[in-house]
Image 1 (cartoon, helix red, strand yellow):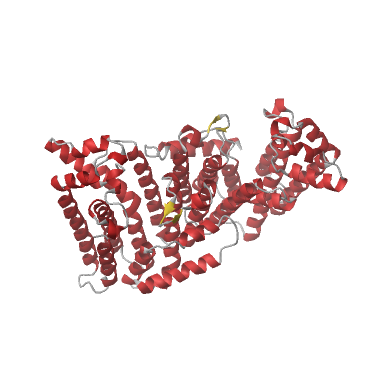
Image 2 (cartoon, chains in turn yellow, green):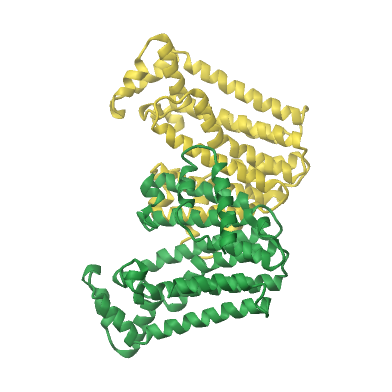
Length: 314
Length: 314
């Protein structure tokens, strides 16, 4: 991953250096230079190599995906009224909302310019880009609803987060000339990887040590955020006839007893269930990758990347 | 134009009817169904026919351009804090800002899906789409500046308004297999048509009868909006050593004597100069079109459309 990332980061810096001066582009450069793992572009490069291509050949497509991802961050931060991203001011906080809207729009157009017209790549990109918008729409709608089911939540996460990982891999595979079957396998790997990652993130919020995560333990629970854990916890409470979570949610956020909520999730078996679900998703991701390469030789970099993501979030 | 427009409107309605239900798409349908002249898609269809294609062949590209245009309206209305468009609530006023941001984003992606991957079309579309963003950026920056020159204003209008007319025509021409020389000619026609249209619009605001325009005469002047007329007027005042416009601008909008400002523009010769500039731009548009078709036979529909725009705005 280090080599891929260095190659990609140099490509990003070249792109930034070639930007014209002006207020339309400065927010793009600022956001692209915030600390980032570059998971998506690295996936594109790895998928290309897996199917016999060279990672240099997909640098533009990898950049297109990273630009798209940053466009979504720029606009999502407005919609979420978030003032900080990775400890730094968000674009709309540093400049203003209009600048964040317009610079984001231009970034989406420039993402398309990077993706180019290579056969089949553009359709995959647009389809998944639209999925990300659908996911964000569901996320906003769920905030206004109290009856979101686990299946609905999963579909929202799939659209908002997982499909872009799938698209990153698919585009690398397409550019390397992979068969349609292999494109679907690598796409399924990305989707399950993304779902597992998000669920691990939810678990980390509730059960991770705040010294390690750097965030308040149970911050999502305090805010009543409808994660997999809370949705499933409320379902289990209803079945069990208990009301710990429900009663805490009826209080205002600052009055909520977060340790009691975390404990309720353990008692209800939601913690164990979520960990089992993560393992199930990881196993599905693994089996898709093994279908491509039973010996795990050519897929070793992708397995290593998946493992690095797993370790980061436990 | 009537036939082209009916054909296009039916295509828009088919597209709307095929949209999935949901909050992401309703604002698109709403905005697309507001009264509209459909100038851009009609230009695409006419340019395609001019070079031997059938207008049915470019319906998807024409729709892509109209979707792009509506995406810019949805986001510009947020940036301008406009609550009404054609007498109806804007999307962010009817729903909310987040919905207008996200639905606009999705509309841009869907515009790309309609444009497709036909040779050369996508590059033209992206280049001009980015120009429109650059134009909007300049427009916002000019609001904060008092030293905007006529050349800067013209460049802003070219980017924000005129290039999309050029792109509409170019895309129709490309799809019909026009030569590069003819693509450039039809593009130049569109750009000059757009510049003339905008300048006529500025003239209409200051010198048009409010019974005819349906707006307050001189509304732009009252708001101190930096149009061609006001920028040129201030230049002329400086040269002449008078200060009518300058003094009115120092007052608050409601205290401005708009008839005095209109009169000052006449006295300074700005009215006559602007009319001469419109004629110059129209002559350039005409000569580009005559270069394509000296007999004005195949270009008759485009000349008729240009004339209809001209009559509307005098």
